[in-house]
Image (cartoon, rainbow, N blue to C red):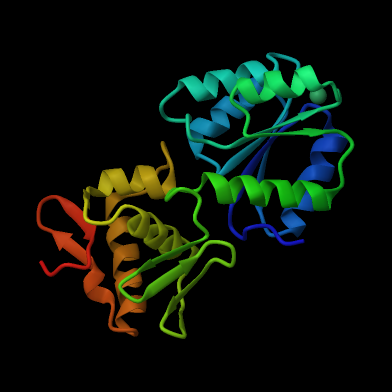
Length: 234
Ligand code: CA
């Protein structure tokens, strides 16, 4: 069972053997994994770089996973972050409390790595921008989230992971201008130290990849403002 390659999962679990087992299974499935042993460390990691999904244990030493889930759902920066709660308890009332607390899914220990990967993939698919569509099409470009492939007609557009994320963001937010700062925040995640001219480098690479398929004009420079993905001429 393969995960969505390149997606970053934050695993919050205080029991080290369980955390390591989960992290190992997820890495083997192709996910990028970061680990936190309590809520404090998890919150630091969330500020550092926003993951694509949080696997959150219910019973943690400093604050319950449910409380953390509620906090994340109240904060506009993390409101859309998908959360899967893990628990050792199988009671239906816990499940309801977990889902009402803002979790997107709920898993009872023990679970198989295969089931975990399948559930993560399902939540990521549902929660992606663009209403959870697997496939986004625009101007003859097709971006398939399940396989992380971009095609122009029947040819594959070869992209690095950052260019892929950038294109995914642009295709789900077309016809709007984004400043470099906004792109940094939305594509790279908050509080990451990346110089703004790095954006220009990735834009150039993305254009170069699209140019091989005659689609580079979709990425437009808006002088003094930033960049826009648009099928319309300047
Ligand atoms: Ca625990």
